[in-house]
Length: 229
Ligand SMILES: Nc1ncnc2c1ncn2[C@@H]1O[C@H](COP(=O)(O)OP(=O)(O)O)[C@@H](O)[C@H]1O
Ligand SMILES: [Mg+2]
Image (cartoon, rainbow, N blue to C red; front, side, top):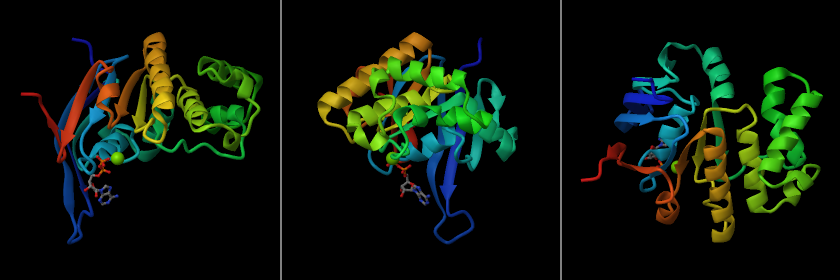
């Protein structure tokens, strides 16, 4: 059988290791994600959703267990290799967009390409414009991020997340800060991008209404994936 895009085996995470405050917050998570899948991650506050996303996003390491990305055992990689893999394989969208507010929409979308390749060139600019067009913001390319609405900023963040054509986008409550109309727009945009470019999304949301429009729902409760009865 073909290797899934992402596979977690018995992932555990403890914070404060070696201190009296040591606590395990993920207790053996098993999870598989197929290429192009669009999955909701739900669960109460404090259940470990962001911790899990940070581990999947190679921003933090599991304390125990294994994480395979495109068949590679990421536990075997050093920090520099993880950083490179993250840059090419994973896009991030957060609740607060984390755009550089004094930069234009175009400059923000170019940022991941700049970090990867060092200096701007015409191809990067064209790629960024293309992505802004895809998220419906081509005419806003030259506007500074702080002049854009919340929904527009989140669209720029999505375009930026797609800059390196990653097979996986991790979105931590990307619509949590938006009114329901803008949330719906941003959700539909992500859904379309996923379908068109076969990009997998793992989307943390508190909205059951949005979650039901995903391919499936994964629920975390107290650091464990809760299986439907
Ligand atoms: N850096 C950290 N250090 C210590 N505890 C943490 C840290 N980050 C999260 N936690 C704890 O881990 C648990 C899960 O948190 P989190 O992953 O943020 O949950 P969620 O995103 O589902 O709200 C919570 O009890 C939280 O307090
Ligand atoms: Mg969280």
